[in-house]
Image (cartoon, rainbow, N blue to C red; front, side, top):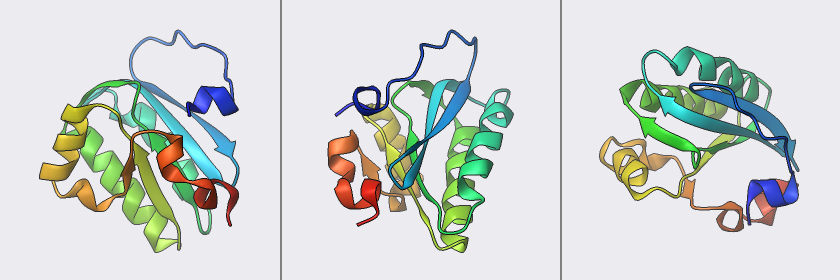
Length: 129
């Protein structure tokens, strides 16, 4: 199931990397777009910090629209994971690109649960059951 099927959002034509944040059930979705590198990471940080800053945050980071991810992006994901866990919550990634999944695996970020779409996430996470 696509995120846009259950929660359609307007099309954005924002140049460069950006994120948009919205609620889906009990989870906060941070949908990341573009190339995530040293120059663009700061644009994404605010959305991830807001999503992981609440108590018991359950955050889904949708990386499907990401076209490139370097160590700056990996650092953002690790930081979000640590912030959420320190507040009693969790971060789950939605990744359908094999090269990004491989990058997560070989850099030890494989400890963050990864799904290819919302069907892999399950109703329990989305509805808080």
